[in-house]
Image (cartoon, rainbow, N blue to C red; front, top):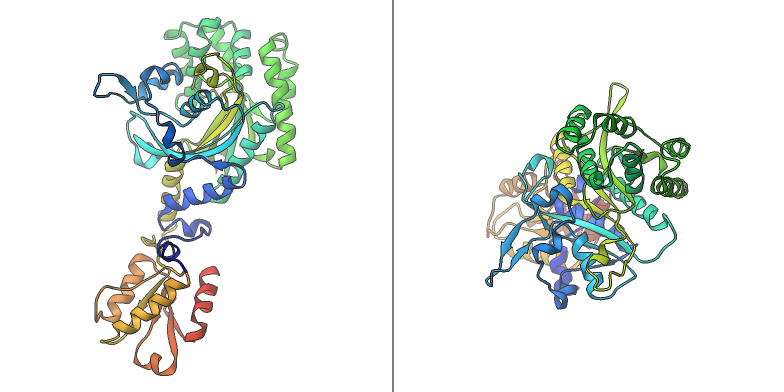
Length: 462
């Protein structure tokens, strides 16, 4: 085994359900998400773009995020030019496509983004955090790539075993059609959309008051909007709205509803429609969305009702942004795009809470085996055994003491969550065995030296 692979054997391992996340959960989440996306797209890395390092002038991000623009970090370089830290991975991706004349690509990207926000650690809200984006760019028939993005959200949340979840879907065209049918002037459509986006944090009465008092909508228009944004359902709701007398004459709403019907047909083929809710209150306040939008939330059962875990917020979201690339292209050439962002840090917070609530011992190491000795003067035997384990790709360690006490070595296993201890002493050397101890049950069994690797692997895989 090469030195690189041997080093990796000391630091990394495959995820196995929630228990695996108790050790370095953030890394496990990234690994799990990455493995799922590898089957669908190429990885875009920071290293791979080193020849295309670009400054981000403030105007690049201006007007892309609606009311969330106030959360963008601004700074000046040495020459006094006003720059910004990236708010998300979508706008930089669109800019990259435009500058390199790329019109067809499928990729995923895991990297840091920055928000000038008030951190709330328990809710996964940070000023610097990781996001994972998956995007499909290029000309496609309607709703096929959009359905794939929803399928990916379903796969990731199922694999991470976060609990029950729901993926809300809507369409900006439907929302715009609803606003227009309710008498909202075109100049106030974006403002109305940003206000509706607050329904997951505010009551309808508060949202209505903001629409009327701050956004300048009439009370009658706000009341009509309220009738629509309370609706949620499945394909039956789509069919109902296609017959709606107010929406039937609106071109945008009609296009959006027909595409939504097609989307549900594809989601049925994917077998995930039971996790999908067509929700007219979903707005996603980012200005660059042009079509289907979606957001995944965790839910819980409360007195025969399904309720969203509002203290957590969404764990994934995205949508179609067909006009964003054209904003950065000198010829305004549009490249249709759709994508999804996975909130790595928010998921990490949820996993952390679940591990703590389960009262399971939190592992603080990736080590699988501690090599120990019950007597003094067995450093050479420990070094030889640990070398064999490393060469076999098993993550092993030992205490850096010449003659550590056995009790101290076993306590170290329990404190850090190392599952196995390989004990070698005078009697074991004489008998040609290694005593393998299950740290959780404290049961010990003598294993012939030549069968040790096989037995360790068997136990780690079970």
